[in-house]
Length: 261
Image 1 (tube, rainbow, N blue to C red):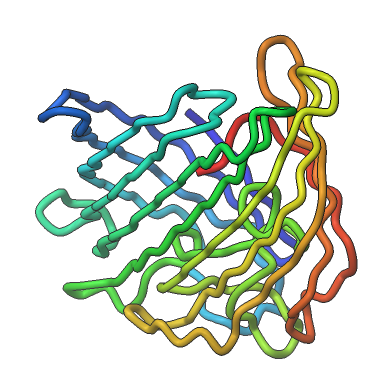
Image 2 (cartoon, rainbow, N blue to C red):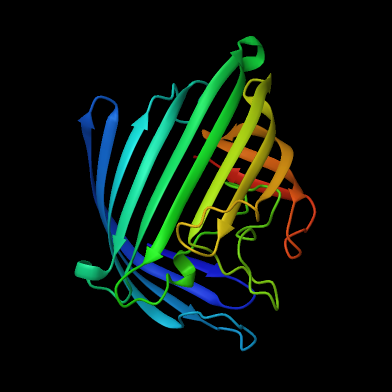
């Protein structure tokens, strides 16, 4: 698989593959063991960039273990139940590759039906994670740090625009600790068209295991949900409440397919 990312200061190209084994462990708990190999190429780096960034190609060799418990009534249009997920990843070390770090992340979602009339539902989502270097690696590479902002996290901010920034030009540099929460109330207008009101809040901190919440950002907003060719489409308008001096860009439209976890 191949993916591209472009910012104002550099270009990023990823190429690699992933294989995994998934199995029911006990009851409702499912386990997944995976291996992924990637080559990440950072190029066209602007001479005005002032923060450390690993240029050129970087080989990443990773093994991951995920535990999942899912009791939702529907994978696409959930109205009740929950989804709990715990993710662990080990990069480098005995797996070779160019860099060594690890990741621990938890994700939870709860769906609460409140009235049958117009299928009124409250969705509560929470996530938290850390990523940290070990061995001879001086720091987690820029491209695998945490960022928030965009259609699946803080919808009142531009993509990847919440978190630590280079203070000269305000370019996001990512962090090693994050937490995110969201509450959304939705109801049918005319089936399958739904209306939603939401509130999102989260923070990204530069250091690993650093849970200070003082630099949080949050937003509120509204949106509509409908189906296109069998896939759920989400159109949201998020309005920032608490911002930093670089990411206060006003209201943001977000357009996405699928569900959020």
